[in-house]
Image 1 (cartoon, rainbow, N blue to C red):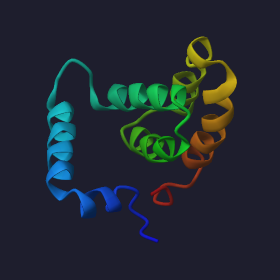
Image 2 (image 1 turned 135 degrees about the horizontal axis):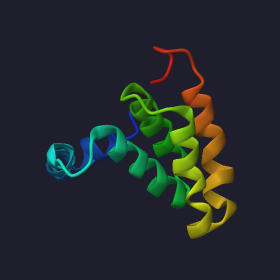
Image 3 (image 1 turned 180 degrees about the vertical axis):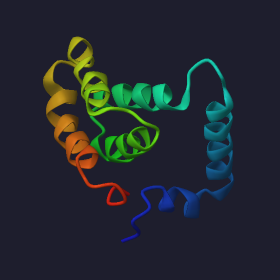
Image 4 (image 1 turned 180 degrees about the horizontal axis):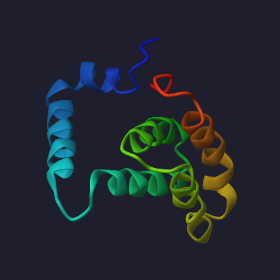
Length: 107
């Protein structure tokens, strides 16, 4: 099994994957939010959706961009008002395990 979670997407729909990646890159270039804040927003959204696989990657990116452990926790806790315990129960343990790994041991 490929460790890249998007590998099947890229293999089966390469033109769509390229377009998606271009969209992601364009979103990175917007200047309304800094990169760390964008990652915290992704963490909140993905937690509300109950997507621990995305949490794994976005927490590592947010940490690399200087997000504190408390910021990661708050980004997940804020989902309580949107989806109850689902996001917290499913995503907070994953987020903390990624955040608490020694540097260089994330992705």
